Length: 84
Image 1 (tube, helix red, strand yellow):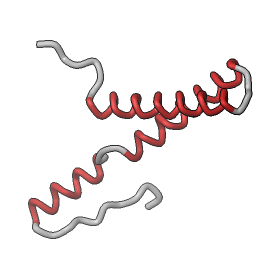
Image 2: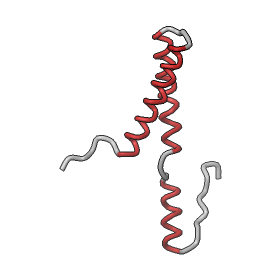
Image 3: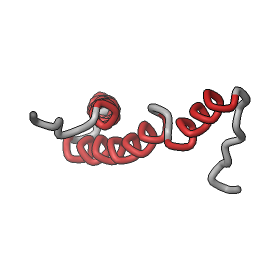
């Protein structure tokens, strides 16, 4: 059986980032900027949006571990943040 090239989460992250980049590029064109400048803005927004949506969408490993601990022990586990 064939494995998918991307997971559903990764495909969603890239789709939303592409939509954000296309929106930024379209808005830049509407302001009267040239097409090359609009493409640069769109690509830049795409790059930042990938990182943003990667952090925002779906539970990370720490959240999944916390929900497993609640199911196993019946009480919420304290999840450490990155700075701790």
